[in-house]
Length: 276
Image 1 (cartoon, rainbow, N blue to C red):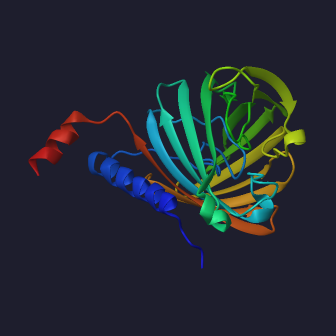
Image 2: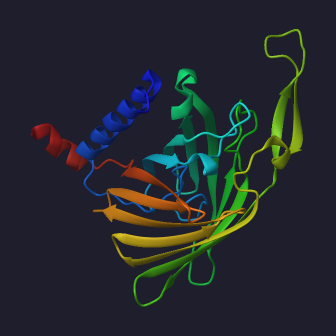
């Protein structure tokens, strides 16, 4: 049996309370599938899809040990990744992750990660959507770090929708090193380092993916994440929630569950709720 720490319980409570709050005030929700970090995407890889409304997203994913992202204390462990997504404008989105390691319960949580998605180009008939993902340097644990350029194009295939994604993630990252100084933080320097040398295996180099959505509530996806081939199936419920079943390297099973809520509250709906 997996022992769940108080920290993990608190994170789950936050998910539940925030979800209930948004459900009370929102009846028009828009949502698509996401990757294990809670970003618009596939299994491991991101896409350039972008919702029309600024939204707040919640996501939780399970990854088996052999496909875990965090190289913690010199080893990989099964991990649960919580994702929070906040859309500020129609071109800027902030993402945050907390990783919980159930096999290392005594230490609480693992990697804390933040990144920014920038919408460079909106998809049209001729050109794909284009998104830039940037991870600010300075994270204490940077195994989720990725700086990538992603393009996604949708096609009408007669039976539902088909999309294809192509992207490139730099195999290098900026690392902040702290020197010995007289102040509390010490002297800091910025260096470009190889992700491979740091055992960072998430999104290095070229990646690609496809999604076929034959029905509004069902989708099938496949991807190459730069090192392995993965597949998945997702089910959507009334544009409110999505459940994904992921097949890592088509050998091990994991999954994700996500919710997404528009941030532009309808004041008429708020007044209706107050009268109840």
